[in-house]
Image 1 (spheres, helix red, strand yellow):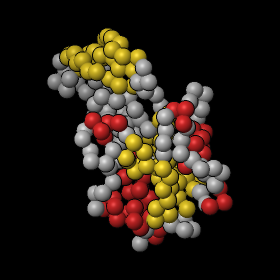
Image 2 (cartoon, one colour):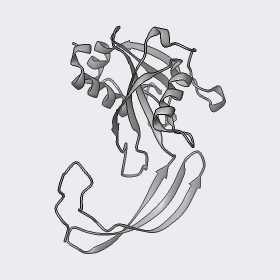
Image 3 (cartoon, one colour):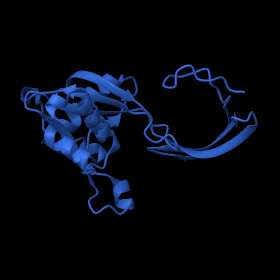
Image 4 (cartoon, one colour):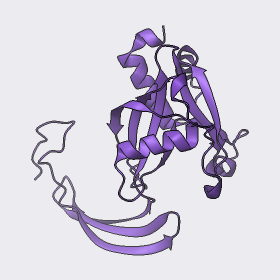
Amino acid sequence: MYEKPNDRFLPSTYRAKAVLARSTSLLKSWINIAAIEVAFTRRDAKRQSMTREVHDHGRVVCVLPVDRERRVALLARQLRVPLVVTGETDPLLLEAAAGLIDEGETPEQAVVREGEEELGFKLSSLYLVAHAYSSPGSLTEKPYHFLASYSLTDKIGNGGGLEAEGEDIEVEEIALDELGEAVLQGKLRDMKTIILIQHLMLSEPELFF
């Protein structure tokens, strides 16, 4: 039988005794997809096998840079192919800047690099809000969600992303009260961006109201 968790929000002694039984590669490209078979112990103590297709494309970061003096934040707007697939009227997504962590980089180094490449600003005062799974039913992706600081004097370029990687990013500076209202009205379509704005609203409400 399982032991009861000693803290519901932390890794516990509660174990399903899950074992990776088989991994079959289905695709190796910019993303990797594999059929994964796992054997585990159910809550009734019976053993069971489960097979799922798992999508892995590496470690990622996302960041919401904030200018607290002017009460604004920097976001990126870009074409997202899955939005075309799902039939969105507008496939250009307004979102927090994000990207893969390169080999040998720390999450913090990746955030600074993405801030320069996508937004054209040198970011500082990085604060890790969460390191959480985005869609654990099928993705290994566990983004590092950061807040950061910037000011107009930190501008070092135009941003826009890397043309060599096909990026065509429009940088938008938006008032925090407008972003807060957009979250409350359900107007934003990107989960990582909603998480970061909501965290900022809860921790520093004076920036919004």
